[in-house]
Length: 235
Image (cartoon, rainbow, N blue to C red; front, side):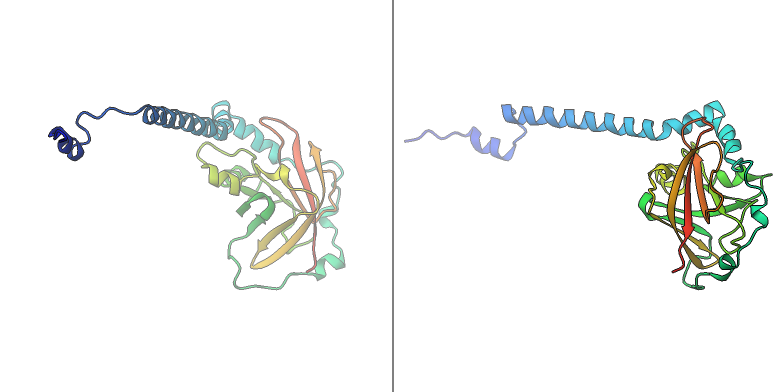
């Protein structure tokens, strides 16, 4: 006859009493602790990497320096292009679409840029750059067509910008925009579709025959800028 273990039912109803972890459970616990630690470390590193440029901008005053660089897109060869208008450029305008945004917007699907286009003169251009993309006021609008539309933005933005805001509203990913890809501008409820045909890096624009020019600084506190040139598609 088997001896009755009076302690066994008590143990079943009170699993915490007298419980000793198995070797497998101990290994699993250690693994989960290490995984949590490394996840935390990777999260902190990701945040530091994402915000480091903005912190450096703020502490060094580079935002103002780069803003002044972004405000000087014109080369010596611009000449009288702003006063030259072709009949072909005046003729085409996309159809008016009342369902489009009332805000003037820039959309670049391949780079996840989707942002409002901000207006400002050279006297207060920094107010526009602090929000995102600035239309250089000395040049044309998409509807005007008498000179290139020139849009500029910081690449790294400001400390107050969140990561999602920076990715959508800055030109951080502009260098990834490739020749042949499309750019859309919603202007006064008309959608202007452009196709990138050329790109360059330097201190000045090299091709003023473009219908749209996008640019940003190549790196932190650098006079070198990344330029993208695009033609308007009549579609």
